Image 1 (cartoon, rainbow, N blue to C red):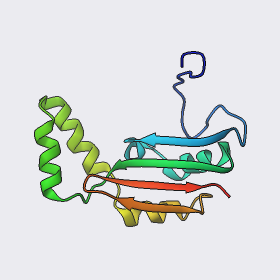
Image 2: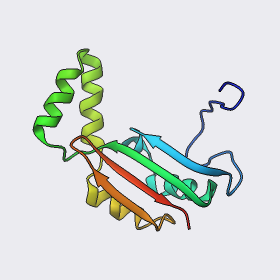
Image 3: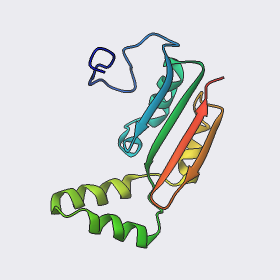
Image 4: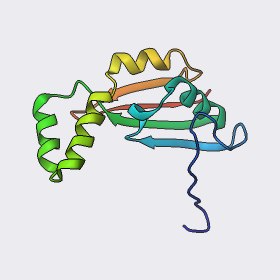
Length: 125
């Protein structure tokens, strides 16, 4: 895959790609760290082709306390555990992410959740 994939470090609020470039956009475990989530979500919309799919997953702040305990127990290193806890505390609830999405160009979305995370997926119209 080395000839098909390149890794770039860029600000997600200003992606270095033309409009309508990608068939799909995927992001995992970073939504809670986005400085301006509306701007980043609008960039996802901009770079997606019409009919393109997006999939965004992240931890959820309102996860069940037992699920949170299980995650903490799986994270053995103290510094990693502190980062995990900070990420959980910074994560969104379903209602919060829905309100953010409603302020973006991503109009066709579905939000689901599991014991640990929120998943946003949809198709650009």
